[in-house]
Image 1 (cartoon, rainbow, N blue to C red):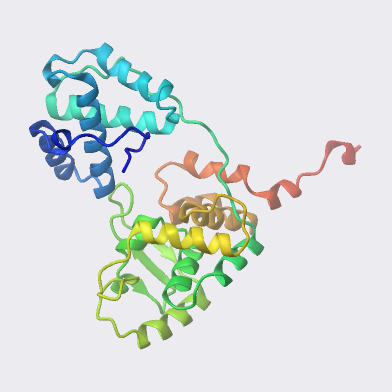
Image 2: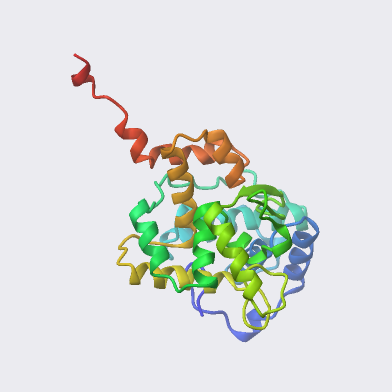
Length: 291
């Protein structure tokens, strides 16, 4: 097993949770952070303490800078990963230890990469390559609703309003509830599936024992289906979310509505899809043709 930036797994003594990391975890829980964020922040905190080799109270600004530089140069981490580590350390020092040493340490700028988006033909091929039943319904749900993989895992059957073709995402990113849309065809198929499902579970997508399907399982499922469909693009659950947003924009939907459906707190985050909308670009007339 490796850490997110490829460092070897820590020794058994280091794996045991230090008291400071236990405090960090408790503060994150109280602050309402997601399970995944808590896991990553505590992992980054432990890695930093191992790197610094000194009590947290003795750590200086240069220790933090050295660690972030180490991740960037030695571990070849992306700016996004280093920014996440920066946020984790900021919470550790400012939120837990009440030591203000992060204010003058800048977080690296995020790379402005255009996300991978599937064409409609590729989405059709992906769905067709996915086994019928739960797995295919899951892929259709992700593409047709634009939900995050973490939100799929937590989705309950009683969060669906099939008659209205809507659903509620409970405590999505940032602990915000939001409404999503459901496909007319998907609603018809999910009704049949749930009426025949023998598993007693409140989870929309679950294992045979009724427990929710994991995010890792969904990621493997998407990867396997993409390979079977002959899709060469890097395809993940988030690719379906990108495709959902881009295809809505192509169809002329308001970017404000797309922002609401995706659950973005800032319109700037949604604006990236204006760079991936091929149909919108096609509508632009070359100045040569206007002469």
